[in-house]
Length: 278
Image (tube, rainbow, N blue to C red):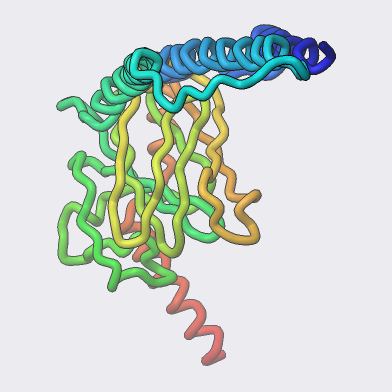
């Protein structure tokens, strides 16, 4: 009798811990709250299965405990039982997959009024690029990437020069503005993840991946790399700040464009040459 009781205690303890756990999700700060609903549905489906299987195991251990006078029945097939299990399993899989596919379709279907930015990941930091006055991100080429042009912007593309470049770990975005995040990696696999936005996507070298979201709460939210990318993976952190329009515009006006960055680098090079000549 000890084993069935232990199994029952494990079931009860697991269910109780789920409902009274001190750890839960962070607040939702974007339009993707339905991702939480999908996960909760997954918990209910898998939870019911867990309890049912656990109770069945406990019952079998008790019902068919050792008895020297009992003989086993040989029943290699049971068509009725197999049909029941097949149908129940199919219903469970449908319940698990359907909401996720619906949410995923919305997750990758970008609205027309979206504002596009770029996030660049590298070992071990972040870079951000925003469109300038023309509202269009300039084109890039990996052959252009160097210390002075980390994003690989094409200097023969007029849309590139007013792009706003942020080589750091802090990004400001505008409250309630639909945002498409284009993701690139300079070296290995990374993953741009902001838990409060319920949004994450792998960053794959040689590819541009993307997703979109709408920030619905002002505040400061941590950026994480959710793909192991090397020895300093743990330190690949950043911050997204969701601002009201006045605060966002003030921050935006302080940032440098690609054209200004090129001019600054050129002046620095001239200063270095002059210093050597002196």
